[in-house]
Image (cartoon, protein in one colour):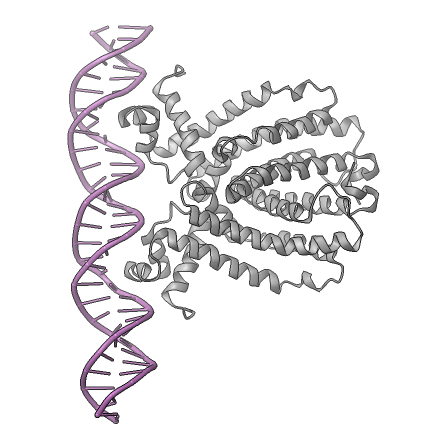
Length: 206
Length: 206
DNA sequence: CAAAACATACCAACCGGTCGGTATGGACGC
DNA sequence: GCGTCCATACCGACCGGTTGGTATGTTTTG
């Protein structure tokens, strides 16, 4: 597809930075072009519309974050539960720098687009769901390894819950202007997962 | 202050509906006036700027939701833990109708405003924090009633975690276009709180 | 009647998007 | 190996409509 360093790549990178910091609507095409160092002509050569850019950015976000998490070393654990807990610890670890540097592009975008831009909503949903499925696989393996068959919750539901906690933690971080409460929320999530898989609480509590 | 049915009230109501559905930036002053059935003159008579409207909307949101939750009947329980669980069950109960009808105004707004509109960020933070403090009071009472002194988590941290889960559940609901996963996430939160207060897991697990 | 509450008319800046054009480079006939 | 052809990548002036905001009335209310 497009070469690295091309206008398309630069516009996508600019979209990551600007939309995460200001939101989608508040980011103009001119803003994106200025940040990417290209002109409007280049923008509309690569993207049919601003909405089209949003969809492409969501897909690119999936690719970039997918590779990022695939390269993380929590996958080394043999025990799938350790991989899940390692994943969550990793998510906590990367809460560094400015808020806009660790928050989620698609989580931010879907809030503005879900009602009026179906294509964007769908692309964001796909990004979140694809990521959740990887977590789900480890959760399901951990359940199977422990013979947990009668839980009143599912691997998929718990995987999506982890994503909800992360997205919510980002909102609190934005509201309070720092990552501290986000980290605390992830600690609660880690504690919850440990409790769920604790033999004393078989069947998921109660 | 302003009478009910006045232009100010109508504009604030319009802000609730439009911003929850489209976000803050995508909602124009003209949109708000049209929805409220007033003119621009009325808008700028009551609010110095669009940002000013956002701050007022966040404060009004605090008032309205504060009264709404104060009137809910989970407060009847004598056991503070039952009040906490009743609160969460209530939050799950009110996930009805369109997504824009049950999601959080300030959670939506702070995503677009945190970096560039400090006054709005602050107003949203105040709204979330004030609400969380009421949950915190019941959590703290429940901990005291059970003599839980050595937990590695605090009442405030858990209260904020409940808000993070709710905000995250809203994002997933927006991404997926329905309330189902939001409800499932709240179920996980309820299960977590029960586990935390389960005597078998004293000291908060591990 | 004075002040508060609204309406009307208007503006400059900015918005997403279009359009005619150029620069580059690879494919292909000869 | 050289000119023709064409697709891709990119440029930047420009357009009509919309934006937040203002200036100046008119109406309502205490």
